[in-house]
Image 1 (cartoon, helix red, strand yellow):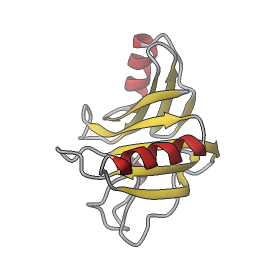
Image 2 (cartoon, one colour):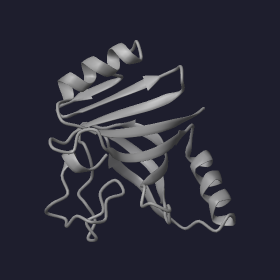
Image 3 (cartoon, helix red, strand yellow):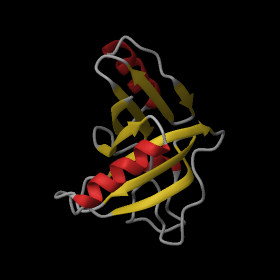
Image 4 (cartoon, one colour):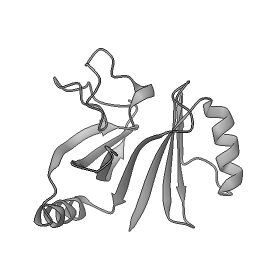
Length: 152
């Protein structure tokens, strides 16, 4: 199983959930304050909505969800052979899920791409940001600024 992930910033989570529920004839698979994700079977898509007032309509980040850790490793190896660098995040919590993932570096227009697998559900949105302030692919923020509204 592989599916494309599209994480969107939305101004109003309730309004966005209502719209995307109709668009994809599907209810969210996970819903938390300021957050929702849909597991859409046709087309195969993981749609993540992040309430981020004032930034609605913009892409937060992109990703590829894969079946397991072996698939994460295989993709990282394949991309390294193609000359693409990556940053590992193993055993991290992001988007209310414990994940093993990596972030692909060097997208031509600064897009944030992750390849990940979900290990388990989590009651928290994310781990504490690292010393670099990194949160779900965002490197512009300081640790104090990194909040659930601005990362995956």
